[in-house]
View 1 (cartoon, rainbow, N blue to C red):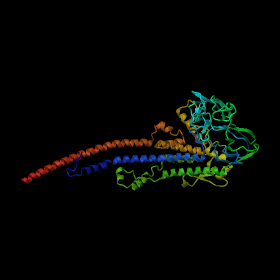
View 2 (cartoon, rainbow, N blue to C red):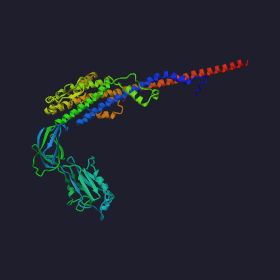
View 3 (cartoon, rainbow, N blue to C red):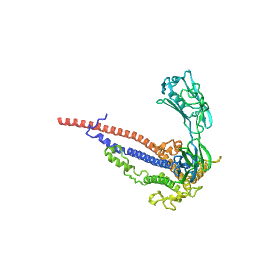
View 4 (cartoon, rainbow, N blue to C red):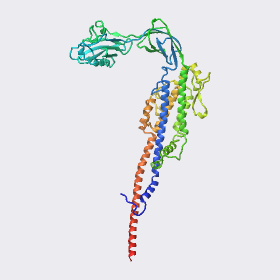
Length: 571
């Protein structure tokens, strides 16, 4: 307990003023920590923009990505490159993938794929009343005790396998339905039969989940005559033990461009790059229908235009970061400074303090430069007519645009003209995957560490040269993201980064223990803050001891002076 002011001095005020000077070093530490934290947050925002750029473009193009080799592996299934027109959409609907051969194709629909469906022909009875799903099988007439079995045959890819459903007379209809729906072979293959019981009509419905020749309802054992026999308990219309032989579905059958009797187990299938959805069987199965396949120039153009817009948006954000003005006179506010300011003033101050923290940043500038150069380097080993971006009418804008892309609409040499001329060449230029899956592929044994590094560097060079421009761009963005992660960590974005590339954080976790450069910088500052806090505590105690001693001495002096004055006054 400190008692001050006995001497008439403002001791507490003097100690506080002295400590303000002592705390200047601590304030510097706190400001340095806050600046590093803000810089870390801004790096994380940059990486988030990079990640969302890749994910948004991938989603827009509908392309698949891989954790190895080129980021985009195949464009064969793209549905926006070609357009298909069916001559009769009541018979079939057609869509074309990128592989669809342009021209008119002839189709005959001879048979639709179908499964097997059966149902109770009349009300199922529980005694004299209509059965409910809550009725037990005993109510339907099952009298045998113990575990009972209903056995099926499931056709799994052309091979029949046994499926057993176990029940008792106490099992309810609903429970039996659930058992059929979840029934599996010993290999955990599904029976493939969907069962349901409608209490309103008192009927059991059975149907195969799939269509085609492998779809079947085949009962091999049913001692209680639940489903088979003329008087089966669920009123299934069968002749004798018909379902012991089983009923099977049928395949879809078509003729395509002269190839006859092509079979599919579903009414939705892809043939020669054309997705067909059969809707109905024509009255005359010899009637010939057509599907016309053409390049959808506008759709391809629009997709590439969206890519260019998203790329320019991302580049614009990065460019603003690296040229943002730095206000060095606006340092992070201390707690004491904030107490003396209004909330709005604090907000405006911190906007200035955060500005320009990534100005001329080496990591961002290097990523942007790598992206720009990658887009204008040739793609090697192409089979189409384009190996360079300008050949399809995409160029950089003016110098002030700082690397943004511009689409030329020149009738003869613009993007639409290139798509019309050779759409597959355009796709290859943009999406071509490298034939090399990783940098160690084909590495011979017995190499020294230096030779291994040289081999991997050469592989990376080849992979980059062979990769289509968007593949190459994505790879460059990922490299930039990794460098920023090493600098600033992942923040709350780790799952987002893994969506971009599943193994993107492996090196960061294994080599640095998931501690970034800025993480370590902040930890170092926090250690210095703890040391400084101890010093300040000790210094403040020292001041108080000295001032307390001075107060005591002055108090004694005042007492002596008063005594002497009293003595002299009495003389």
